[in-house]
Length: 161
Image (cartoon, rainbow, N blue to C red):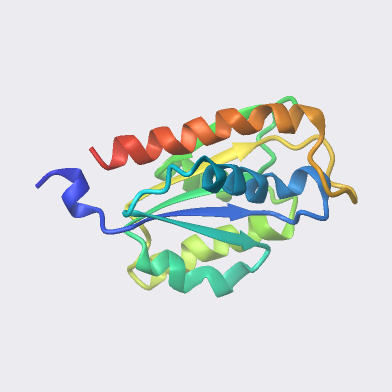
């Protein structure tokens, strides 16, 4: 069976608080992806914000998951990294810097306990510079957003071949 036949839905989940500058990057990237109009029938886009465990049904219903979020990855601000599968799980198991990082780890753990953790999963993470009050990401994070969109689209393309 081809991979595309085995994937029913890829959930692309943007996380973050858009009132806290760089923390909202997941939401901003998700909006950029939607604005690109590259929506595919197998792909569902979800503005998760800081909703936490209330997102569990969406994750349980997805056969694959891509999360976009600001994350502490120990790199210079604006650095973009993609963590897939077990690498994503290990990244989520590290030190938490925001409430939604804790919630994402809890979401993945809860889905796993229910036997519904998506086998294909990835975290597209951007190292924030500033998470204080502010409605827009800082320039380094804004500059990283197109790369995050490319990474998400690349994952979707690879997973649906």
